[in-house]
Amino acid sequence: MMTSKDRIIVSQTVVSIPTGDGENNTVRATHFDDFDASICNTADSSKNKSLNLMMICCEENPPYGPAKDTAVMFLELLCQAYERKKCSRSVVSSPSTAESETNTERRILTINNDDAIDLTISITVYHAQSNDYPLTSSEWFSYDGILIPGSLSAAYDTHIAWIERLQSVIRNDIHRMNLKTVGVCFGHQCFAHAFGTHNENGGREGRAIKCPTGSKAGRITCKLTQEGRQLLLEENSERSSVELLYTHGDMVHSLPEFAISLGGNANVPIEACAYFSSKEEKILFQKQQQQTTTTKNDGDSSNNNDNATKVQPYAFTFQAHPEYTSPTGFNINYFNTVQAMEDRGFITQQLSKKVCWDAKF
Image 1 (cartoon, rainbow, N blue to C red):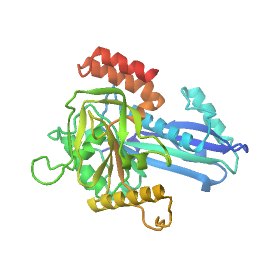
Image 2: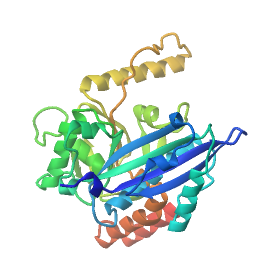
Image 3: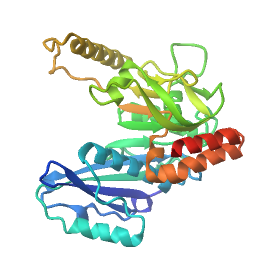
Image 4: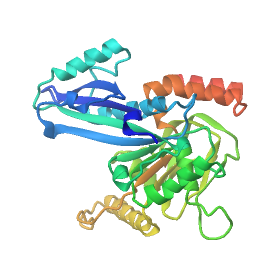
């Protein structure tokens, strides 16, 4: 049994320092395995924030793994998202060498600014292929959220013990306790397949299948549904689609009754999903979103009940790989995965070169 001392933990602290000119500068410090968040505390601890996540690693080997590399991709992605939202520009990026890491750490330690705000993001790794999961509900609830990333395996291969166990965990732990979760690629497919009856009886079921039009790779457009635009885009955005990087041979074919599609395209109709605690909550969410849209279109806010409890999904899943846009994901894992797809005959050499060139330029 794996103990907390044996676990991979990747962490990064981003400190936002107001400069007095209306802008924020950021400094990052990166730590692996032996992270001690106390060294990055600013003068006012009330302004220190943390995001403590767990990742259920589903692939231990390259090109998508190993587990630590996968965790670093998501860590970089989350730090980029925080910086983009909170700060106008970065002063120091993630250290690439031991020396630069020490220098960045020292700079954090000398900050003494009452207005500084820092966010520490930590990702603790569990291992699905080893049936490694939290043992108690309190251990589950000790994390702010869960990441279920990609794998070279197939969600519908439930005769494989660890895949069946993962889907059982999704049903009986994550869904039952409404734990905030993001699933990516294999995680996206497993989430849907976990709730399927896998037979021809009953209502609409979740199901993952092999892509009928073949494996996909590269930058692909996802046209968003109304719910997708409301949940995934900034308010008042005029965009109707997003472009992300993909590498996959399977897809979600159908969803359980308490999930909604957030977007897709002709080849892969369900590329992003949101999951609710029940069918009734999903319907209530759709009604609330429709009311909000109608109110905005009419320009009348009198019917908008701000005191009403807003229903929100507990989980989002994506067929795309947002983490490929991180430095590690883009420079290493994305191109290695595309090459592996070519080597295994999933995509042609011509397509492999095209999607790599397209992603770069």
